[in-house]
Length: 136
Image (cartoon, rainbow, N blue to C red; front, side):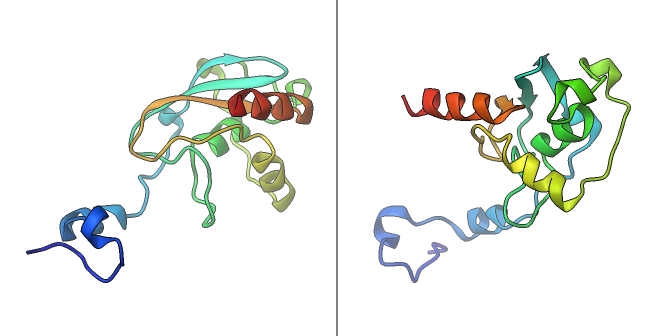
């Protein structure tokens, strides 16, 4: 039997060794082509998230769809001239403060292997409202 063991709930939630190796793989490197915005305004960024890439940075601060959106569109609409995918030509490095601002844009996340729509807030009022909406 090639099931992993050692956890008290292995009987209920065991996985194969190959599944375990797959879970430990580093995330796919995210590129500009992974940023597929649907809608951008002064309050939100709505973008497609392809399967296989991370939606949010996580504890190791991997590049992800949210950080790409932050790099290309910024948190503030007034400071961003990019509003469509065709204008995603401006790349900027993230400072420590930028990383804090990025964290304050995240409304929800999608699992790495899940594709779907990712919603990011561009201001704190919108973020609070969207968090409340997702709770309900």
